[in-house]
Every structure is written in C-alpha cells, then in structure tokens.
Length: 589
Image 1 (cartoon, rainbow, N blue to C red):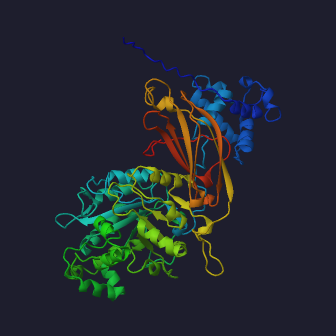
Image 2: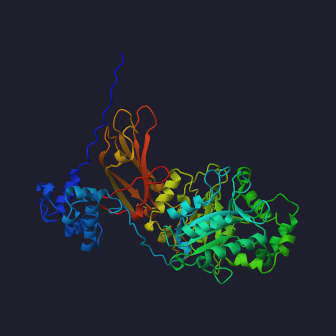
Image 3: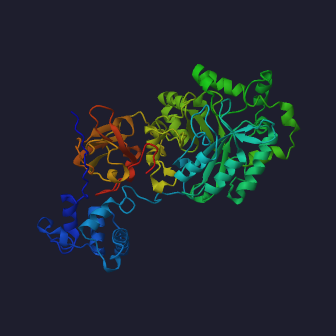
C-alpha cells in the first residue's frame, strides 16, 4: 500500500527578537524608552518610534559608532524607509520596530567592519600587505586551462592590486603571448591583457596596480613590450627617473597609476655584474634551457632540493636567447624596457639568507616559493621580518599545485611578506582567508602592516614570529540569529521533507597560539535559526587574526550541506549588533 503526500513548507515572516525589542525600547520614543531615559522592560515596542536623534544615540552608545551626526542618522532612516515603504515614505520620519529590525539586517547600512579606507596610505609600499594574484590570466588549472583577459578583469574588480603575466614569444617570434610556459594552456595576446588592465585597473580601488612580469622574451620583444605599455597606459604608467629606488613610493602618491615589476633585462645585469655573463657562457651549450623565470617548473619542484633549484634557475637564466641576438638588438631598445621597471625583482642566486641582506640605498622585490618560505622562516624568521621592513617579499604557490589550489597565507603575513600570490580561481578555505584579509581598509587592496612588524630595537632586533606572547585581548563573538536562506534557496534545497537544520562554526585563524574553533548547537526545522550563543577567543596577536564563520545544514545520513561563509579581519570588527553577509564557496555574495 502506497500513500502519497505533499509536505507544505510554511515560512513565517521573521519577527524581532527580545534583544532587538529591548534595544529599540531603550532608545525609541513612545514605548517606555523615552530616548534612553525609560525602562525598556516596561515599554510597548509596537508603539515606539526612533527618530534621527534616538538612532544617533543608539549608534553612539550601543554600536560604538562615535561621531555619527544627526544628519547622518536621518539619512540612514530615509534609506530604510525608502526600501521598505514605497507608498508612505513621504509621511514617515522615523523607524518603527520592524524598520529598526530590518535596519540591523542591512549589511551595507550596518556593516561588521569599517567600509571605507581609514588607514594611513602615505607610507612606502613595503609597509602594506598587497592583494596579489598568481598567474592571473588562467581560467582554471595550471596545466591545460585557457588563458584569457577575463580572469584579470575579475581580479581587478574584486580589488586585486598585483596582476601576474607570463610573457612568451608567439609561434613566429614576432609578437608576445601570455601563457603558462611548458604546459598545454592556450595563449592570449599580451595586448588584450594590457588593455583589460587599463580599462579595469581602478574599477574597485584608486590605489596603484602592479604588473609582475615573468619575462621569457628576446631583447627585441622586450622593446615591443615597452612600446605597448607606454602606448596603452599613457600617463597611467609610473616609472622612476633613477635606475633603482632607495625607498618605495607610497600608495597615496600613486593614485590611478600602474607600475611594472620584473627582473631587469639580462644585458643590463651583465653590464653591472660580468660574473653573470661568464656563468651563462659556460652553460651556453644547453639549448633546451628556458629563459629567466622567478618560479620553478612543476618538474623541478618535484625532484629537486632548494639548493639544486636555485642553481638550476641561475645557470639556465635566459639561455634560450643567444648572446649574439642580444648584441644585435639596438642600444636604444635595451634601456627602454628596463627603464619602465619600477620594482626590480629577483630570485635567490645563492642562499636565501644572503639574498635577504638589507641594502641601505636600494630596495627590491624577492620571490620565494611557499616551501622556500617555510624553510627560511624555520631557521631565519627574523631575517625575513627585517628584509620586509624596507623590501618587498613575494610568495608564490609550489609548482605541484596543478589544480590551482592555494596555501596558508598566515605564515607569510606573520613574517611581513607583502605579496602572498594566490590563484584567484582556486576556491577554498585558503582563498576565503585572503578575501577576509583584504576586506580590511575599505577593500582597497592595501592593508597597513601592524606596527610591530615595522619596529626595530636598539640592537636592530625585530619581531620574532616564533616567540610565544601573552594574551593581548579577548574577542567575544555572539552568534545570535540568521536569515536569508529562504530567499536564496528553494524550499527543498537542504531537505526534501522538512525545513533545514542550521548550525554555525566560528574559527579564529592567526598565529598558531590564537587558532581556535567553536560550534553552535543545531537548530532544527527552521529557516531563521536563533542560536544566541557567545564564544570567547583569547588572542595574542589580534592584529593578524581573522574571524571565519561558516554555516552548515546538518544532515544525519550524508555530508552536511554548505550554507554560506565569510571571513573578517578581527582588527576591523565593529562592536554592537551587526549584520554579517555570507558568501558562497567562490566568495560571491
């Protein structure tokens, strides 16, 4: 005997909770609160109204938004009324309880972190963590995906400030393509990427964009790159008058400017260091060696130690371009390309410790793989911190991350590394942390490093990331309630026969001593769960801590369903009742 039935999902409108009613009555007029003078427990919230002065008091006293003016509070009221009351908006001048409750849920009006640039932007570039992409042109994996300008555009629209392009000659050797060398990735013309950068560089942030070039070109094609860049970018392109910088310029001084960072051309290095040419000539019989590259090939990464990798890349530098071809290039072409390089880059030629010696009158960028960083930090962590106080350190994924996955960024940030290069198509928890870090400072792509990473003692001592520190502050997070799934998902998305069973996981990701995880109880059969649970997190380095939140739907017989996630910098969290928007696995809202 079979019985057919149709389960009805009844979803009621979310009602203000007791805590929200109490907060409203404490500040509203006409419900016993009297604008902060009454006893909220005796008031009738349904009859109260919160005007601009009362909202201003709520924002100041309860939310900690000191400095909010009555005019700003009135603008918030007007916006809430505009969104909720299309017909009667001209007759309303304050918020009732439901309006107030909805105001708290508007994350653009009641955000969890400061939504605008608020840090000092006049320090040198080396004083900032910079939102950095890796192989920015790839649409998917590192071996066979398409190359396109579309990922470059998406990265810039998200706020990424460092775009990486790998430059190779085309099949005829007369033009330049962008592709991941020695793989099956399909190329995209360099000119398409440069035009995309020009058009979208400042779509989300006015602060400078840095193009890091992996250069595998002859001198003639390098000159062509210089011509393309100057023609396409025009006055947007910044480059210094001198050959090298004694100190990096500041983000504030480079608004709407584009810079290039790469290794100087080989002939320029040879003129300054004859040893390089001698070493190359000694190995010139290797016709299959690839030109200069900051990053190792996947095969080299798999089979070679750090020392052999460094020797391999040093000995193979630029050997596919014969010395005769370089000498035939005109003398005016040679300096044109290197003159456009603002941030001189390189990879260790000897030991990393030697490369990290700070030069007084010169700054540069050094690139290390994630594995090289781990090894260096385990033995010379303070040398890394000292180097990054004036110079730029770029970290890139190891060569075996064929699927475009990412690594843990906190090791680099803890040691002051400015450019943690990530695969922006490598969705996952590591990328969520990257998104979280760069939501700071208004999402402009530059986050000021904590002061302790920039300080030096009387004896040149610097911050030691390995040293255990005392608790500096305790973060208290109350996971109160959630809503919105009923609008974004079908009624049967999580469960075919009943409403979802949501729970929330709360993480702290930072220095090892601060890492923690907490979990709320499961709220069964409810589209708008109320957890009302508070967690405390003692933090030793709150300046580098990230608060990661993930909501899941409990499934008794299968893997729990993903319900949304977000990540926020602890140093930017605002007190009070805040609306925290959730994102999907790709980081889209």
